[in-house]
Length: 199
Image: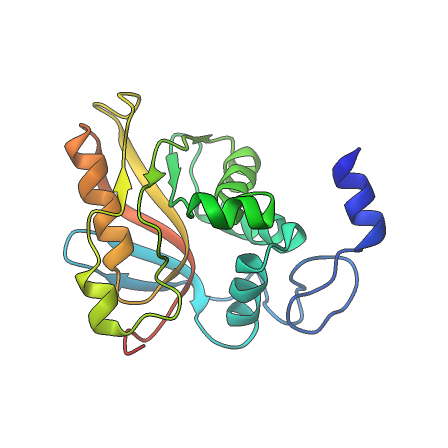
């Protein structure tokens, strides 16, 4: 009921062009467009597109708490997900989750998992108080120890990380290291967009 009221008061509209109907429309970001890939030191990252244009607008809208955008992006990500995948979303800080009312990446990952018939396990916890948004490249690469995996659910499992954007890859690598320490195998990540790595 609560979500229906939100949809009534704030109808779904494209994050890029504001056309009603969806958090991200086909005209701004065609779902048939080629995926973008990047190799990190220990992970293969696959993205819906580059961190520019419609996908940049969508990531900003997601970070600003747009539930309709999270759902639209999750549906897009589902095309990359297999039914036997175990998705692990990269968590946001507790303060940002309280401010937005939900965790956008977690919702996005859940929608992708449901659409693809896969499992989502929100086993990572964010223990750092600062996010990567607004940090320099050097600061991003130096940021470690921001996550914990206080669960044995992933022990012996092969999991795939899910996040909104990959810039330097520091966040994804940090999360992967924590999951491996908990007994998981992590070789890939799905994200909405890949930035050029210079930010």
